[in-house]
Length: 336
Image (cartoon, rainbow, N blue to C red; front, side):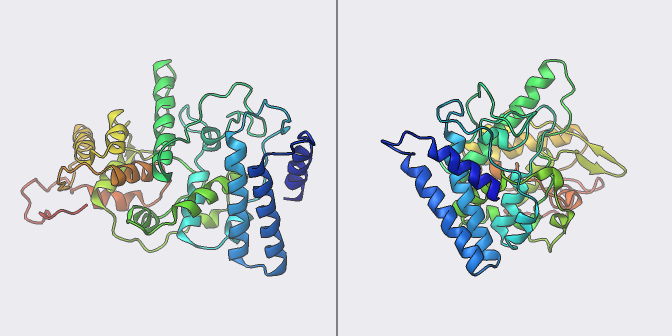
């Protein structure tokens, strides 16, 4: 941490003395200093989480800056150990942010950080010389996460068009959230989105190649919206477990677009049709057909979050093969 702050301070000192560094950078640097003092004075998980949030606030500004503009940072800041994640505590925002930031290179898509900052996918300690437009765009945190997933899926499809094996869906992470974490993310008002976003960017400084396996502990599962469970089956990195094998599906390109404009019913219908082509029987999902852009964006964002418990998703979303549409045990209520 000291080395990264030293590099940051040398970068700030190179701004012309007559105007100094941008006020936003100065303010964020001061916030980090205050948070570090709080850690030294009081310690504890809340203080460390506050420091990671301060780092995230700074990183959001640096990520939007042209890395070729003078003065230049010689490299992206980062390299923190995974103990930083564990030290922040067990708040659901921390678990979700750590899982999202850990999304790794898969099937032609790069690491998560390369979608939110101008960094080379193959050399994460180097800025990209000619960065494409960043995927971190949208009207709120959920929309920006959905934008990242949409770009990752596009990269996988482009690789497939170039004749290369597309590999698995690009939602694998070295950390996983649990299904009750995702249920909280989907529940209105249950998550502090500003905190989540700061933590996501703060955790991009963590070296995810040395992820601590303790982050994969399974917690008690909370009831999940059925439409999420059904949609997520199409976005699992390994595919859908069936017996001793995994059945891989590539989600239809329009599903994320439909969700982001609130057409949840249409997205679920397309997903159900894809599952049917592979011999799966989706449980009934009753949608009212109302356009709900806020919930649609949140569903799309949730599909990016790496999760375990794939068999629980199957049980929630699919019927056993012997059941039919008219099975008396099928729920007939709106069971999102």
